Amino acid sequence: MPTLKFFHVIFVTLSVSGFFLRGVLRLSAPDMLDNRFARTVPHVNDTLLLVTGIALVAGYGWNPFHHPWLEAKLAALLVYIGLGSIALGRRGERSRRIRAAAWLAALAVFAYIVVVAIYKTPRIWLVF
Ligand code: HEM
Image (cartoon, rainbow, N blue to C red; front, side, top):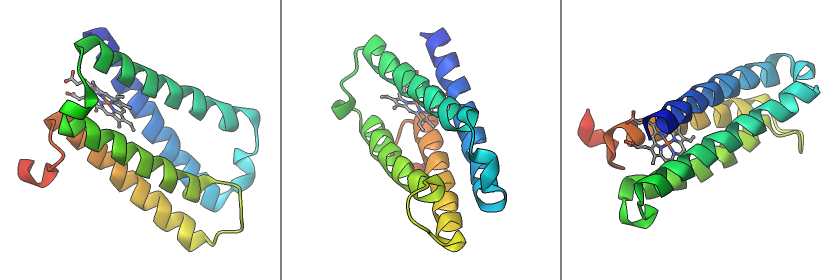
């Protein structure tokens, strides 16, 4: 399990670094995202992040719905995906302002997920 968790955290780090960078490029040099690498690698990494998360839950024999922090993590993950697609998505001509706001909000949600994962409580304001 420690190995799995190690890889989970590696994918977490790669995921947020990639998301940060893609957000910067989306707003400043969108053409740089128009290539096969930028279109496929983040999805592969995010799939591995999800798979290692599910494998950890299965490995511990946990029911996610018996652990409020896991429920909060999964709900926040959906919000993160939604905001991320507003920030980076190609559909529609969204203003830079909306993209930038969605990008910042997605990063904040990501930080929330990390704190929830570390302290195992959805009420993260209690840990500060
Ligand atoms: C954006 C997505 C995610 C982020 C940022 C994230 C972040 C993290 C972090 C930072 C840890 C290490 C916590 C520690 O050091 O104690 C962790 C552990 C863990 N994560 Fe995730 N995770 C994500 C997605 C998921 C998903 C989708 C699942 C389950 C379906 C999951 C399940 C777990 C479990 C079970 C642990 C192990 C807890 C432990 O052993 O103490 N994670 N996650």
